[in-house]
Length: 212
Image (cartoon, rainbow, N blue to C red; front, top):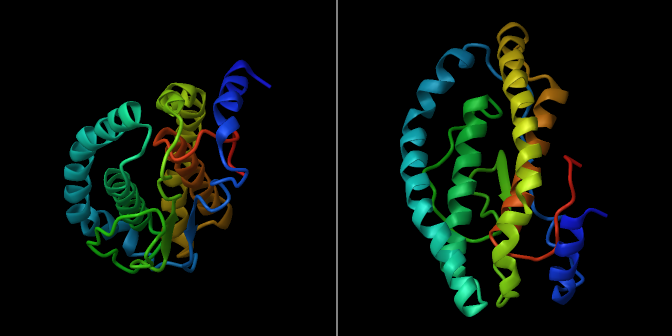
């Protein structure tokens, strides 16, 4: 056990024995097949969502630190702010996966909040834990403790860029996403969601490393 894991373990002594992580994941329920012409136009169809995600990302630069400050002062997560930030992440996942060609169905301009996915975009789901009623103020250090995870995610992200480039050509010539490549992107996104849930102070249980 590393020093970081020991600190996180101590921080999580007061947590419920029920882990939030098994249900914190991205789920893709769409065919691997996709029309070949979409590799040329999917990015253009994505532009309206890009504008929305850009605006939301700037808003999150205020709402995320504000949520952190509230937990520091009160020891109670603000469920409204947490739900808003969860909505932003879910919106980004839906729009991004459409851009990658994971679905031909156009994602809705939906802004429902909360941890559980409302199913508004059936091909893509992002389920997150709900904000707890209270949590140890020690959780405000979750973002620092999660730094090793973000380093690993960046390394995986470099690989993901190459996967997306290769998959673009694969879809162009075969009309189908390579299963292993798409599964890798989904697992990486689920891993990021678990770390995000930890840094957003839904739990003091330290997430495990890796994609599984």
